[in-house]
Length: 482
Ligand SMILES: *Cc1c(COP(=O)(O)O)cnc(C)c1O
Image (tube, rainbow, N blue to C red; front, side, top):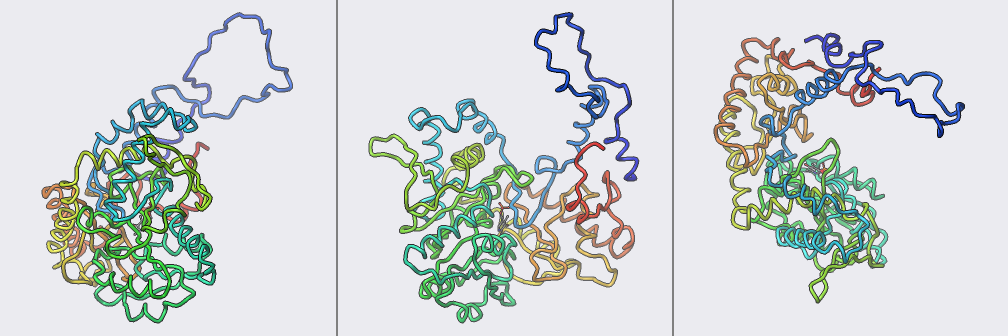
């Protein structure tokens, strides 16, 4: 559909004089009438629409949205798994939704117990001494974790540590969080097998390094086997090792960052723990620390007393508040519902199933799509576009064509190590039928790229709008009626 017509159908609906309401004259005396100088002289310039038009506008808009409840969403690095509805039911319980955040701790013991239970569960899963649930997102967790690391070095009067080392495969939030925490960024290279090059890392480690941030499995879906050695080198240099937990999913209940030698970590509840990804929120990025760093975690903390009651505590050694109250409480309750409904035994099946699905797709497509790193991947993997580059069909074109078939596009052009990155993560919540359908469509697109490249290059053809200018849309979004 062309853009102008689409805009007319769902945006420009106003007709002069059309009303969605009628207020009857109540014939009451105007005793408390506002002074006339405060009254609006001109009518407010609002769209003039009737009620059915408004309802249809919003309902149509909602059906143009793509979510994990509408279709397969193989977005690499983001773990877009199905969000079980029991999470919603638990979080929507009036015992939680009717709480005021300023209610005294003595009157919200149940809510504090839930918060504390999730803290304990995450500490067990991460192999950490203590967790805070207060940060609002993964990136916010990174910032909080780096602030903990700074507080640790400051407490030892070791203030020359101003650098954070991140791999060249790192997510953009890693260097961004380091910059916001007032630290300098140094990049370490990956080897051809996709793992961090220990020989490149060694000479970078000195008394100016505060932390090394790593993701494991990394953003190529490859398990970093050398973590114990890297942890030894980092600790010998007096720095701390940070775990970006965005890729915790394949390790859930199987391996623990704390056991590998990581000192500080965050978890993205909206990824691994099946809570919704919002448009920038609400999410949650709990931060865990190993023993000896607990005192620096943000305030308030939920502490269990000897008599079994719970208190909110703000310590002097804490780095202070990073969020209002206890973070996104509703998100935390969804994650707790997920953990409790799976239980310990099933939690450890998540990673192997996610890994199986990713390898199944990878092996089923690698004769048509370029696989730069051979071998077993974890929960996700990266293709470098089509093998046949002669048609000029790019990763962007493939991603756009997938929309025509009703799939959300994979992550594209990330990681930055390859020119045509196409990063696929199926997650454990998808059936083999969904994976088979997706594989068939990916094969079909490769065929189309060879037989009719123009058609693929001009995709999508079946969506309400075709190829918006992403940069223009981000810089100058039109979000209101004009
Ligand atoms: C998603 C992601 C982040 C950032 O997490 P948000 O919750 O989106 O802020 C950091 N690192 C990696 C590897 C990620 O995939």
